[in-house]
Image (cartoon, rainbow over all chains, first blue to last red; front, top):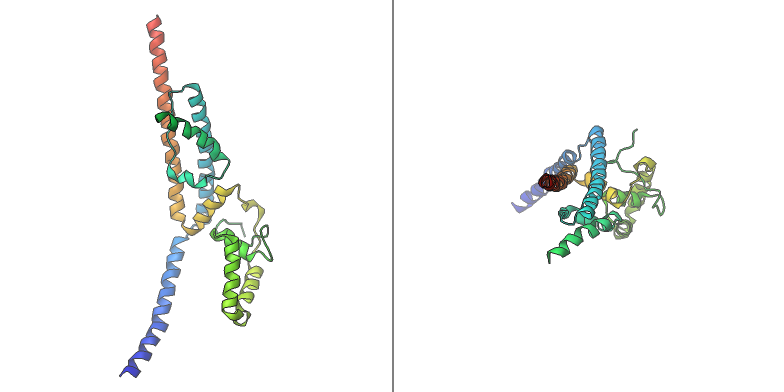
Length: 104
Length: 129
C-alpha cells in the first residue's frame, strides 16, 4: 500500500503543489508591482514636490523661530529619522533639538 | 524604450566586472558586497553547476540595458525611496502622503503662530490709540 501512496503523493506535490506555490507568488508579485509608467511619473513628481515643500517648510520654520522665540517647531514624524546621514538633516536636528532642550 | 525607475538596469558606475551584481544591489537595496559574496558562494556551493550561474550572469549582462543617466539618484534618500517603490509601491505612496500631511500640519502650526501674533500686535496698537 505504501509503495503506491508515496509516489502518488510525491508526484502530486511536485506537479501540483510546486507550480501552485510558484504561480501564487508570481501573481502576488505582479499585483504588487503594477505601477504603470504614468503612475511612476506621478509618483516621481509628487516625491520631488514633497521634498521641495519640506525644505521650504524647514526654512520658514527656522525664520519664524528666529523671529519669535515662543514658536517651537513640532517634532518630525519618525519616518524622517531613517535618513540621518544626509546633510539636510543636520539643520533639521539643530532646529528640533533646541526646543526639546527648553522643555527640560 | 523610455527609461523607468522600476526596471532592472546594469549599474556600470559601481561595476566590478559587468555591473550585474551592482545592478541587483541597486535594484533591491541589498549591500553590493553581500550580493557579490552571495553570488560567488552560490556558485561554489553548487560546484558551478555546469557553469549555470556564470551563464546566467552573462545572459543578464547581455539582455539588460545599462542605467541611463537621467535615472541617477539625487542622494541617498532618493535611492532609498525608489528601492522601496520597487519592493512595495503601495507603501511608498502612503509614505509620500504622510509626508504631505506632515507638511500640512507644520504649515498649520506656522500659520497659527503668525496669525495669533498679529492678533496680539493689533490689540496693542488698538490699546495705544
